[in-house]
Length: 282
Image (cartoon, rainbow, N blue to C red; front, side, top):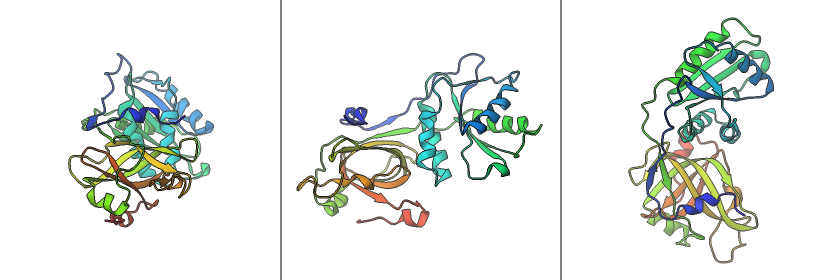
């Protein structure tokens, strides 16, 4: 059984918007999620409890942080991409708006605690000392207010990629030459099927469109990639090695005019501007 059954429903897709969440319930500004270890969570929970009389009330999300923590595990080497990943997942929440308090930032406990507050209105930041201080509550409030600001960001696009059991063009150079769209994608999640061959789910965000037009940076992407555990397992059919698809890395998706997948090429893991500007093949 594959980890990505929903992706197979994307048979013939164009660009689709991601719906914004419904209006918050009366009296509740947002649900909150805390990402952090037990000690960091406890410290932030104490600060949140002290703001019970605040006009913009927050409540703990019933869904927990599993939906968001994947961004942290995937991009622990790249905080900027981790933040972009969190932002991409916020509009997909139902019910009230959600604000994510991320305490996973570099640094030792003795140096204090850094927290970023991610909401539809933007991202705030607070830095706390190693020990609780009176001004911590004010610092957290400023962090929250930035995330709770009204959002004027455009609705995020979703790029659908037509599912196929194999590449339509076996020659990779020819496939890249004939591609109508080329998307540089930051990969947030990879689903590997059971067995030695199959289709691997790749979910991520568009960093930029390198060929074609109409797809904005930040658009969400989901694609099934013909893959194999190692080269040579699929006979003459071309498949991508499963190890080439890693969360927390970058790749180029080559698409046909009808959004069929014609090739997938892993880009440098470090993702520096110089490295990502070089296009493999064509």
